[in-house]
Length: 407
Image: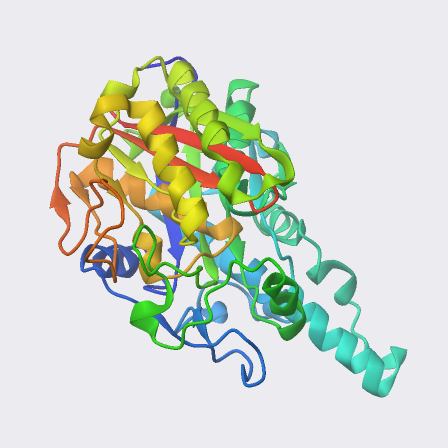
């Protein structure tokens, strides 16, 4: 395994299909669809009717009530996911030197719901009715800041804003921090984009599904694909050096072995085939493996015909004649795309896949428009040792991460 590998020892997932990792994974293997009519605000009069919303999430079960009133929902997701990941890893940050553990998160929307509420208060009642936490709760870095303060983390900390690719970038950034001397890192991404102002900004992309039937809302790689359904949620992982994991007697879920990123500019998702391929090749080269060794791909799966076509073209260029035989999955078709949180959830699913030898299916898809080995219907038992996860930001970022089974 490449020397740069870092071990994933803890997972925390907050997703529409489950507000804990175990519940999420069981629902994902079952191919459940959690997409439904948007409930966070009344969607009447807006073109978006469907969303992937996290149900049954009680922030105060995992974080203090004083933090709940200070934070937007996206930060509450990140705080809760971080707590779940630390618990899963059996790691108490207080047991480590504070300068040897840090956190890197990704966000696209930031604290939009909190911000809209405060702006409405300003408009209707005046400046005296705007709370002091507005100054921090809306900010993209709020999750990193709150996690680091809560756990006393004084090591490397950062935030990345590269849309759906962001969580892959954050995990790679955290791995680099381990190589620079950190012992452990928290990394991932979370989003809670459902406020009218925020979603109105998204309508202009022309990429969101306007379907009203949850089963038809988000169907990537099909002839009826017509956009994606947005979602909230995210995931955090605990990354440790292999030496630190061994010292604690842990094998880990998987190792982060390689990473690559490119930028294809303003051509939109349809122009990303070459960028995806180059990012994947960078990641594979860093992991010191060939494309033939990839056992499963966790697709970006935008659900927009031109973007799906570009992704299939990237798969064909990367894998050649083997492209139609490489298992591909897009479990997010059952949750919606949680922007910067989506790739973090994909990494968690990929880590569970290589740890347990089973690939989750792609919900709501039965007939494909491409010659592609998309896992559909049932989970597939597979001795998957190597997974490739790639993602595209809507503004042109393409990132890829390679993870490998430990041992």
